[in-house]
Length: 234
Ligand code: ADP
Ligand code: MG
Image (tube, rainbow, N blue to C red; front, side, top):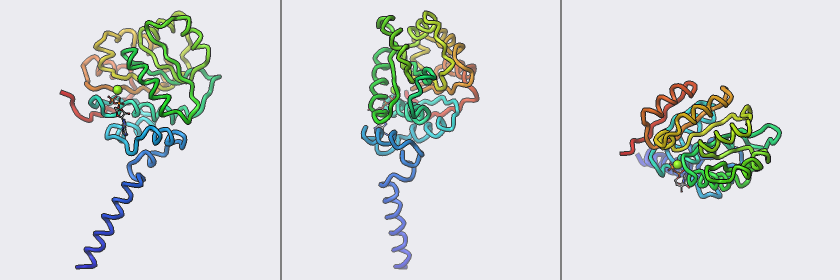
């Protein structure tokens, strides 16, 4: 009896240690680039949130993903961690490789800051393309050969048309706050933008709710998407 109790105690002790050292189910177990892990740690993240645990491995596998989880659940890192893992090093000769579309300027700026923080030990170049800013400064920014573009949809499409931008190098596309993108009426611009992107791109959409417009769009524009629904926001 005593022996069995001791062995149970040992098991509990072991599992607690494993959880603390963050080897099982932690960021460490995701096989990420060490510079990225340093950035995540520096940002103060010790363990992934539930939506991060579910979506990051799927996105790393290259799947298209539609993910729904409530505000504050940590969705930004869900799409940024795989972005950093995929891009790793700057390849200015290639042209931009990732595009993140946000419904508002404020959100785009917030995402840009997130990129600077999580990616502080990586060398990727990111630019902002926002409605309301000068087009001229955006022409120059595009010529600096960024790896990542964070943009609002209307201005991004406008810039594509004006500059006759080739988007052949884009391999990873994010719709952040996708429900708001559609509620704000960006559907048509998003469609037109998608037609300009290579069909081989990976697409991920993050949202707090799943309005019909978003679901229809995902059915048409994504390839065999995985739907990850964490909880419903009332
Ligand atoms: P959402 O987009 O789902 O509303 P955010 O990505 O804005 O959520 O994250 C909400 C807050 O949680 C932010 O302050 C973010 O830095 C923090 N956060 C995200 N992931 C983690 C984590 N794994 N550990 C601790 N804090 C986190
Ligand atoms: Mg968010």
